[in-house]
Amino acid sequence: MSKQEITLKELNPKLQKQADNARLALERGNPPYAVQICQAILNKEPGCLPVRKLLRAAQRKLTEGTNEMVRKASGGFAGAMFSLKAKKMVEKDPLKALASAEEVLNKNPYNITALKILAQAAEAAGFTDTAIFALETIRDINPQSPAHLLALGKTYVAVGRSHDALAIGDQVLKIDPSNGDAQALIKEASVATSMTEGKWEEEGDYRDKMKSEEESQKLEKSSRQVVSEEDTESLITDLKARIEESPDNLNYYQSIIRELQKVKRFDEAAEWLEKARATPSGSADVTLEKMASDLRVRKLETEIERRKKALESDPENASAKEELEKLIQDLREMRLSEAAHLVERYPNDMEHRFVYGRLLFEKGDYDEAIKQFQRSQKNPKVRTRSILLMGKCFKIKEQFEFAKEQFETLKSEIIGMDENKKEIIYELAGCYEQMGDMDKALAEYKIIYSNDIGYRDVADKINQSFQAKKDS
Image (cartoon, rainbow, N blue to C red):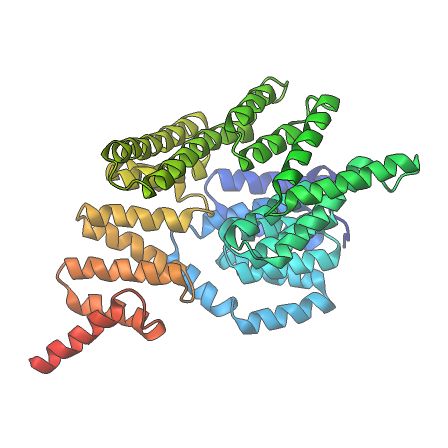
């Protein structure tokens, strides 16, 4: 049995033909057969990541719309017993653990416990790319979990993808600004980036290596969440020099734009953005387009904050209030316009559609918001929030049957009782209440009450129902 990760072309011809058959089966709407073929190939060549990716696509297609199956799989296999058994299996026979994890994923390809086991088993077997694939899948399903993100970031560092690790560290700090592990990851990735660019490990001039170490320190400064203005200015100067040496390196342009925004030099950041777009690869770069949108919004947000502070010292200034309200309205329209542009430019990017839908929801344009959420729910990263907001749209429109369907879908998919699940059940209960079915509404409120007595006004609703029964 193979102990290395291999490509499709490295499979023997017979297995290559089987992989083609699996792809055709999936395209023709026969995911069970695709799953069967992929598993047979992986039993012989567990290190073939393209086949595993095809298997995952088939598993997702196979479980589309089968919420009952998903719930049973999550409850039956993703618990402590499976986790404990699989962890022992990882130590003794990682290839067997890989197969075991895939059996669980056949029933629920969004099962995070099985994906974690898959990542651990792949790493133990030396299948690093497979481990990254599993961890990236977890990130897409649950992008707000620092622990899962950090596991991915550490793996990125291990395989030399330090720039990706830096992005993960930044993402964690946005969720948890005081996360020490994220700060340590950023530091480690910054040093790794500098060593790679400076080729520290190769033989060379001592002064060149010292220069690389200085660059490492500058990169570390840039990765700290709170840096002095002097540090930022020093980094900006350094980035200008780097751009002069490597005028086509978009990473340097993106860094200087971010640093200039930190010190609120938005016009200068816009100038560097235009220079970046003028590079050979800059005109079609998605990241630069998103940065341009963010820059315009950030500039207006900063001006609004400045006006708010000025108004605090002169609260009766009617003219200032009017100007502030106009700027706030301009910001709303700008955000909506920018989001609409991104959706038009990148119609297959479901995250852009979710953002656009959320802004339409906030505006009160519920029909258009529903259209966006119906599309964006196909992306696992924004699926839960898309369906939740879509349900709220239907609820506000008093189309309670449609709203109830969305909330029940999410209630069946989310295992355990977190804040998302509480909100979903609360909204479902509200539907029943507005439909006049108080018995069903109270049954839902009680689920929350038994887990979190202090959630919103649930305790008041339960107490009122008990009091009403006593009075009757």
